[in-house]
Length: 186
Image (tube, rainbow, N blue to C red; front, side, top):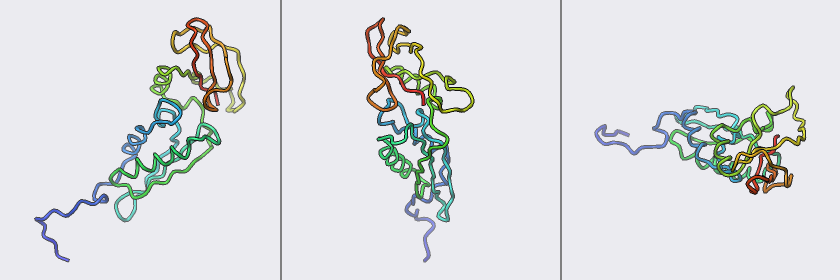
């Protein structure tokens, strides 16, 4: 087939240069976590992005997804959103999401911007590094006060170990009389 070089050919999704990891990361940063007021990247549940070039010039994008809890009810929804968002990018042939459980997710993976957003929405997060030493996943129950995200007071107490999701508990501030949620250390 002979084509006239003066006539532009229709643009194909494979005409674009291969996608970059940074482009995929930007797309993932727009996906909100269904149970938290932050993105899935701020929550730290994306463990890796691999790009495999194909003969078409596009890439197969493989994303490792690390759930906050085994049996997380939002996992299927998050996977679907990842596939939908990343598939729309130029230079992507296919998206594969793999759920992994090792390394285990911890609250230490939440970004500083994610922590700030959670605080603004009345959800507190344990400080980074509060985990037991030696890499153990043993959870130590403590009676230390969690600072109130509304007034900053440490005159707070655990109201209920069971919050709206498995990963949150309910606390009460005696100073400003507000209830707030606290992410459990995992």
